[in-house]
Length: 284
Image 1 (cartoon, rainbow, N blue to C red):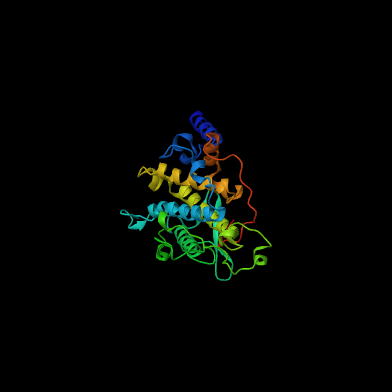
Image 2 (cartoon, helix red, strand yellow):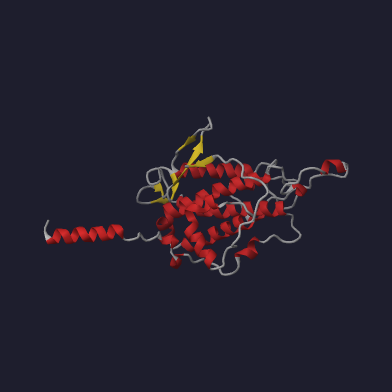
């Protein structure tokens, strides 16, 4: 082997041994936000609001923000005449070594393109929010529109307005027994498991958006700070109320750690009282 070839070989060997730089979105210089302030204040439950009502509001609001980010990756690229996220560039729903599968009609996990997975998640979440047995709503309240849920485009004014659980003729004996999140506001016993499942699916969408589309389109259209702002708010609520666990956050943990170090997120995760319920997708 010639000296030149040996030198090139040594150089390539050193490069292969050098630590790989983290993705741009895991670096402090790209972790900025579009707003300043304490996100814990935004997530904190008002004293006079029942926790089930507050979390119902938060889940709807978090989906509204995520929906705006999803709309960005659905924009049609003029060069390809296809959405930015399409089966050619994203054949699976994946993020940082995690591949998320969907359960088919036979309850078997299958791999599907990311955009198909995300579309199914959106339909599933809107179906949950629009289900009065999960998110009971008072349709007689001023300003309420059931169509706002069914459309899949949730606005701040279309948050759930829970109905009281009883009337004057309900015996006191019916109020005794098991307690659960939101019981006093009329939410079902499965409510906590349902919103944790919704949160888990939203986390997967955020993870794919970052790992698959941070550069194109968010960096290229200078919208990465908007993405960061939506995501830190999402994580803040999830950690504060125990809606999401470490396993689900794993693909985005380096960015979360940056924000933790800056004191922008709560250090300790709240403990939920109900185990997470099944979701339509599974991770492999």
